[in-house]
Amino acid sequence: MIQFRNIQAVAFDCDGVMINSTEANRTYYNTQLQAFGLDPMTDADFHHVHMHTASEAIRHLFEGRVPLDQVKENLQHFHYPDLFPLMIEEPHLRKLLKNLRPHYRTAVATNRSNTLRPLLDYFDLTKYFDKLITSMDVVRPKPHPDMLTALVKHFGLSPENLLYIGDSPLDARAASEAGCHFIGYGAEDLGAELHIQTLDRLHDFLSP
Image (tube, rainbow, N blue to C red):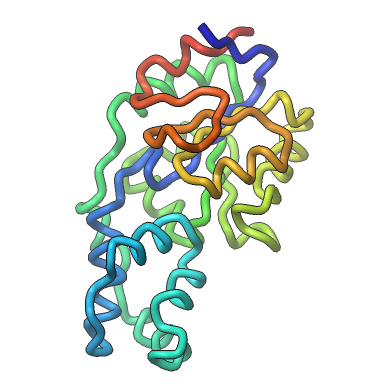
């Protein structure tokens, strides 16, 4: 069995790893498209926007179709917390975080922006993390390694002391370029050192 040794901090992506936000994200972006008389997202559109920052998602969906300043103006009137009830906490997440906390520093590194903390507060998860890093905290969001290198610096670690858990190629590339360990969650084609389908046994792969 694979064992990750000398890990001192464990970081998580948010969407698709801690929170299933599929229905919420579809509703959010399709609502914006409908407001401008456009068709709902295709599966390919959704795959793209689900991984990237909100600004990149809006560019992908609207550029060349609707002036982006009009879209951004419309978004200011959308109350994003209304979508929180559509989101689902991943099974075993809370138990895993409780088990990790006495032994490891914990963090979130996500391409979300100012919605991360309100979302974690809604699920009462904020208290389980030592550091939150979003796309607003770095010059370059994922797939660039900036978030993970910032965590390494924040915790005073070497890259090999950080384990990152993600579900997309953007997460895999960021971890690789940062030089930290990577576990793929859900998808099995990420080239990760380990792929897992549930969070309940992740602690078994960690060795002091």
